[in-house]
Length: 158
Image (cartoon, rainbow, N blue to C red):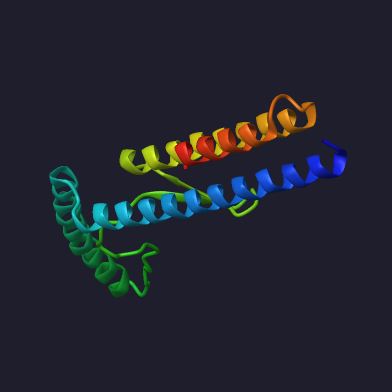
């Protein structure tokens, strides 16, 4: 097999791998979004109890802060709160834009599991790319069976 043929074969493998990786990442993103929506719509009993406690504490705080604001107003001052008063349950997530495309980190264990699975599969894609590129350039074995094995491996992990 000459250099040009090896480059074409490498490009074919890379293309297949990129398509599989892209499809996998899209599926994982949909899983994450769907699960996050489901967790927000149907929080656990513990989260509902915490929310009820939070609402109760917030109501007490609001009443007390209103009293303080009135006293300050009587003295000629205004106190402006600097917090979001939105009472709704959201999934805890942090964004990191320091790398290409950015990443999102989730605190909820079910979402962490999907992110971990995604990371592991992407690492396997990288390993496959390296293994098969080396195999092509080392001309180790029959290229047709190599391509068939490569296709099966991609299908099994994606």
